[in-house]
Image (tube, rainbow, N blue to C red):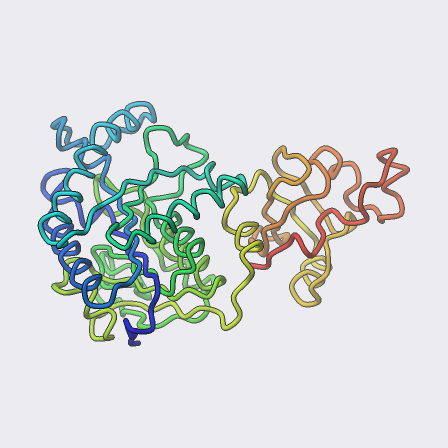
Length: 375
């Protein structure tokens, strides 16, 4: 698939840990090659370009002479803090060298920054202001030094997807050390075949994904598939490609590089529903019965208490939750009208019984369809 740069407004490029890691914990050859390409692309077409980068932990490991990735969260956060300054120094130096007036801007985010709609919009406004300066390339990374384990994005793939969705990007290019998505793990199966295009992420497709592949990596193909799922729902194309290939960005745009293209839905969801689905971390899970699954997925109905079979986690009114089938498959994200304790009391009951059970009835629905997004 080809992408005409003249018709693109904003692209996001994610540089994975595997590209910044080699014999040492951090190596920068791929970073330099990608920055050169970005500078040329920016000069030729004046695109809005955002980079989502990994590498802070690997860079810190290199500085500290560490051979294995730290497992304890405080140590990992400390190593990331050491590496982040040097990582950004490398980016700024490269853009000064090849950018003809381009500069890097550091933006550090945690998932909690996107959970609140006010900070969610503020982050978007900041990025838009940086892009409006025309000479700035935002370099975005997860704030590893402060993010707690429960709020991590996952090797920055999910972060890249949310940044792409948040900023109305046309395209997200995820650069890794493999050519794209295979029908089997290519590290384990010699007959694995590259999947050139995906328009529906099935359970079988997701099952073909493996785990992290480097000593500094935390993600893998599964996080890239989840990133693609987010973008597809929001109308954003995603390409998985190998950052080791020369001129990978140019060749990806003209459609000659090997890779996997994820084709988005023809109808993109609204910004508010993007925030519900992808801008907030679920605080809990509502397992629903088969009848509720059909009502939600097929008929676009609200979730009533009668359809709730089980509640997992603790959450309050207005918090985000995942909605799952009896088998545990995610089908939706939603904002709840009742707290978890109250839902446990009214689940399985008719809406008319809510007041007699709780002593009040704020809503007929546990989740109103306006606050529900089908994945």
